[in-house]
Image 1: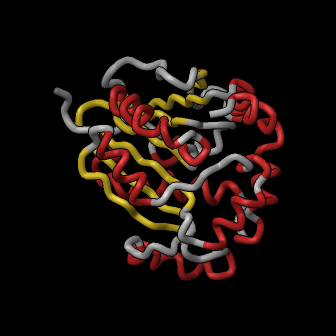
Image 2: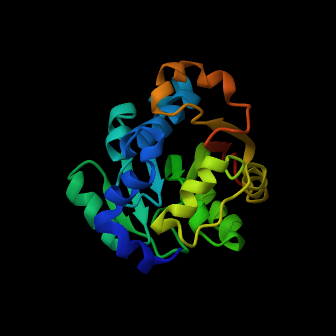
Image 3: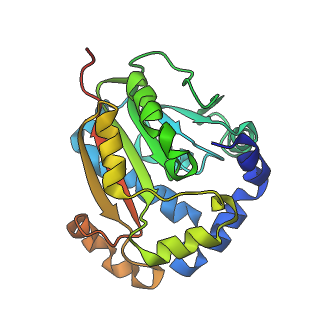
Length: 234
């Protein structure tokens, strides 16, 4: 993770993101909400038991209002290597989350402190040799049985690949195949890692989105999620 790279884009991140995804017919808020909503759906009734959430690589806090909406009872900690991004997030959403710098190695949290860890399109910015180590660190801070939700761009979708290639802050990104990500989670000790594809219909076809849960198996979605459970520690 390159702190300087994301500090540089922090103040204009939303505008750059909006410009890059306009072909989808949606803005950044749509993509932020659907991820948190999908996590809430995945958890089902267990959502009400989530008391502590970690947003890993939270950037400028785009997911914060949606966590407040779907998990209103939970505390939220946002971490990022970009202190400038965290400052922007704290100014956008005062009092709605803790914004805590991360040194890129050790999360500033005690063992077993988090019920839900969330990473939204973060790991394609991280050298792949570091993935398993960071997944182990995320597992460390999860409570036994806690859930990790990792969302990523789907390299099997050519429109996604094109959008990433055009994006200024994705200049050094390296997209991750879904099954590679799942296997790295398993290597880090996570149990029952499951791939789920998402974002099939652009804005003009939004009326069809109610059918998306039936397509989670189909590997052409613009993005995908991997849900994994921490399991008990030795």
